[in-house]
Length: 505
Image (cartoon, rainbow, N blue to C red; front, side):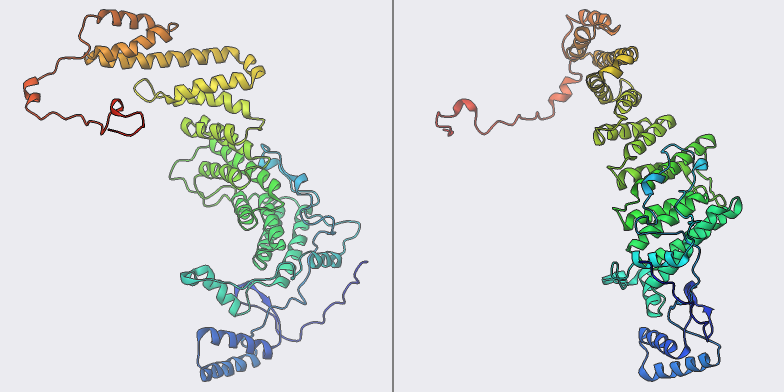
């Protein structure tokens, strides 16, 4: 049954002014002045006679109309033209349907059609207010007083929150609901406008949503308002501010029902930042002071951070593997092959059922080879590349057959570089006249890498030093003999002196 529309409140018979902290307050001077001044004087720890003296001064000033204190009362707060809500279609019930395409351009994105639109069939603001009252109830998410222990009481955030609470300007559920309804109306107006006015309306709606969220933290309204604030910033082309709101929402509500849409928005923002930075790279000293579409500096670094946050905040989400692949591809294009290899490896191990598995194997194979720095350095990338090549052929036989020519070239390159590394080690010991060690490495080349040009050269070098001593003669042997020789440590007992009982003699 639909609730009857309430009668309009009578006009206030007292002054209305904009109080500190941006709160529009109303009320009678007597009771509200007494309560506010009492809280202030108690907070400062004043003596009783001092509190009485201060109260008399404030009461006199209030009676003359110079100063007015009051509690936060929004009985006459003007309601906006917020969208028509129903219990079955909340502010974000269609969140999954409005997710932007992962790689869509930010400029082509558009707000959800029913996210802020006012119903033309029944533009009833009373019903909207009634729904908000029913959906966001005080008993569902009661307000909590600011708490702190130990040195946390000295934190600026706690001090500000405590001062606001003492003066009656702390969080308020009624204010949050009123701000939320007003934001809904502004959002609807933004959808009906175009041009610069559209962005201005979205900006105003975002500010109202943020204020509503701040007035009821850790609540369902906070979750919805924070999400819609991010949406409003997103569609007003303030992508850095939108990403900030999305991250605040996830921090306060890790299991939010808006996660899929948030991931899509953040993915789009990060991809847009990377595309712009690719066309117009920034140097280290570049600073952005005027364009709200980008962070204040290091656009590419912020894009990588957003991709990483998507993977961390929602590791089982729909776009977590896409974000990992996008970051890896960007690092690869940038030439940071070690970082790209890290992301490709993470994609292969963390998302085994991802549709990008073959891509991660295929590009990871190329990245491994590019991470190899030459025969004078570690051969671990070559070993990992060879294992990854075998794994690719075993897990993806169809795709591997289509890329058989490339995989053959990769295998030949791996074998060539491994043979080159062994041959270089053999030549190193040969130059030091350590022919036994040299023969050890060259023999591996001759036996295992016959398909490389190093095999024949290895056989010739082994044959040329067959009659040479295995180790070079000791230089300055008379000087070496002057130093004491190190005694080899003997074992406490030898296996050949153990009785059949297992106990030493």
